[in-house]
Length: 196
Picture 1 (tube, one colour):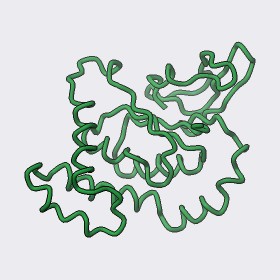
Picture 2 (cartoon, rainbow, N blue to C red):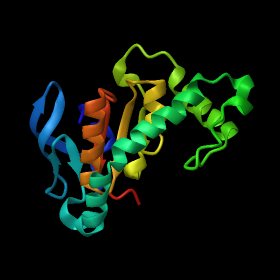
Picture 3 (spheres, helix red, strand yellow):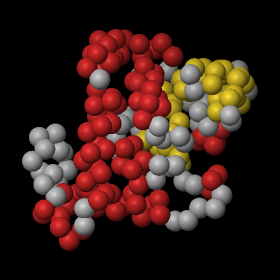
C-alpha cells in the first residue's frame, strides 16, 4: 500500500490517527502494523493490504472465496468490465443507440447511464495535477468480485489513486494479483475493513 493512503485510514474504535510500523519497499508498505497510540491497538498489514478485520470475518469467505478463485470471478470480471467500459469510453456520444451494449445479458446499465457515469468520472479526474500527492483519492467501498467502478476509473486514468475496500481479505488478494498480472493500477491500495 502506498503511504498516500495513510491519511485516509483511522482507528475504527477511536477514529484517531494510525502509525505504520513495518517493512516498506519502493515506498510501499509490505508488512507490519498500523498502530493506534490512543488505544494501544494494532491492525496488520500483510502483502501490502491493510487488514482491519483479521480472522473475524473468515466465516464469510470460506466457500465463497474458494468458488471465486476456482471459477476466476475477479479475473473474469476485470476482463469483462474492461471490454464493456472500453466500448463506452471509445464510443461517440452522438451514437449512443449504436453501441450495441444492451445485448449483453450481464449489463446492468443502459447505454445512456453508462455514458453519464463515464462522463461524471472523467470530469472528476480531468483536472490537471502537477503534484501527485494532490490527486484525489477515490474510495471504492465493498468492491466484491466485480470491483465496482475500479475498471472504469483505471480506463480513464491508469494512474488514479484508488483505495479498494472489501470485508474479505482473500478477495483483495485476488484483486491485487489480477491487477499485478495485468500491469494495471500501480496506485491502487487495498484495505480489508467493514464499510458499514
